[in-house]
Length: 171
Image (cartoon, rainbow, N blue to C red; front, side):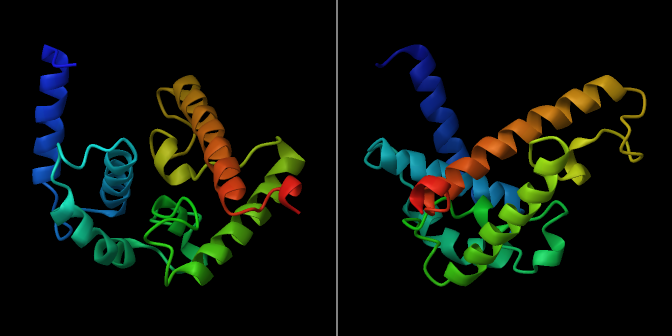
């Protein structure tokens, strides 16, 4: 598949890889690079894209940007699951305890939210438009956005629980 769009996508990906700098970023960007490296490896594209410099820096970056204080997890921060998707993750070693704490935190968060609406509550700090958490001039759009992210959170959490054998069928 040497189509024009594939060539453009490859050039864009090379540009993204070359711009990586763990010193000039944030937890969300680091998490995105973790996902990118994982996908490049999964689809055997390492001969096409040189991810070694990025991969070599990611472990330090992950441990730098990972929020280890559970009291801060209700806000917009780099919870362990942003970086660690399964026990097979290269970032899991040394972070087993904090990952276990987050899994328990997620279960507790889900349990209290299930009594209300049958979903996880999305972290409002990033998803409600305007500071009043009511959507300001766009209340319906804000509400729809928050609901979409609750669904995304639910799917991601279910995958996480499955990967860490924390579902009822794993018991």
